[in-house]
Image 1 (cartoon, rainbow over the protein chains, first blue to last red):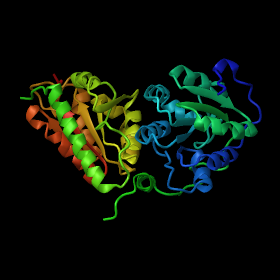
Image 2: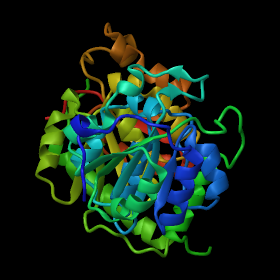
Image 3: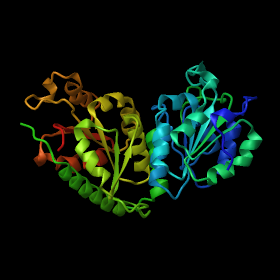
Amino acid sequence: MATATGTDTKPMKAPMKPEDVLRVIAAGRGRAICVPTMTTSPAWRTIAPDDLSVGCVGFMGGASSMGLGLALARPDRRVIVLDGDGSLLMQLGSLATNAGAAPRNFVHLLFKNGVYHTSGAQGIPGGLDVDFVMMAKGAGYRVVTMIDDLEEFKRRLPELLAAGGPVFAELHTGLAEQTPMTARGGVAFHQQVENLRNALLKPRAR
Amino acid sequence: MPESIPATLVIDTLRDLFREARAAHAKEVAEPPQHSHLGWVLSVPDTHQKTVLAALDKEESIRVVTCATEDEATAIAAGLYMGGEPVVLMIQHAGLYASINTLRGVAMDGRIPMFYMIGLLSREKDKDPRESRHSMVRYCEPLLDTFGVPHARLEGPNDVHLIPEYYRLSRERRGPAAVLVGLETI
């Protein structure tokens, strides 16, 4: 597995379209549980409308923590977190918590666009210069990398999903076509929770 | 007058609580458990409950995850719940204040059972917490009331029965419930 640190990341080029990245993930996830948040949420619910996902909207920054809980509870399944850079900055300490808990089945994909897209595309502190790869590596993730090319992402996703985690990949993406503000609706959070729990646990008929 | 609760009593209570939770879970779902330990404690270290946390370090039947923030602890608990695992959160009143939006967004909006043990650091032995001269003690119960979170005081060893009772209550109401640890555990 090739790894990268903040010192050997490549210069930014034309960013990947988040919807294209999400389609690649949907095609390769298998039985993995997915946790989208903010601008990955509207596209994900169209691309992967299933009961093995739960969105993190309304508690910004919590996606990787919720994913960690799922990964710890269910070591038989891979958990893929579809995080955002602005979101992660709200709970940056979660990198250390995720790495410290060290679930082997935990894959943290960061969609890096440098802005708070949902609230009007204001720049995040530090903008695109923030090196999340270095932060994840410093926190103790087992595998860290940066990917800025869709073909490379297609090629490398299987190895990222097969690697012993925690895995972190910073994905250089542009702005999504929709945000939770422009594409409201979808299944209510509490119903998503119920659906995922039922899908995982198979309640006995009463 | 409130009394300190021995850590061993809290641990024994948690063990019994988790055993009961696992048994109830086994009746409800077909999926077999994936873990051999009894349950999980998510903690952001709390001075008030430090003897319990120290004892938990040596307790193999309960897994402890130390979190950097109470927001994380709440979201991790949600994930564990969806995966069928029993969880207790051990935090401090200041951590409740810090994470109240996550409690709202996760436990309340998500209708997720969430049981908190909240240490009332600096609570005076001779004062009702609502009359404490420390704002972090004084505002804890009013804040929980504002959010409609049921709560009870652990004022001594005779009150530990409230731990499983409020854990069960969080399951029944599908939302948060809390017990407030009045004095520092011993």
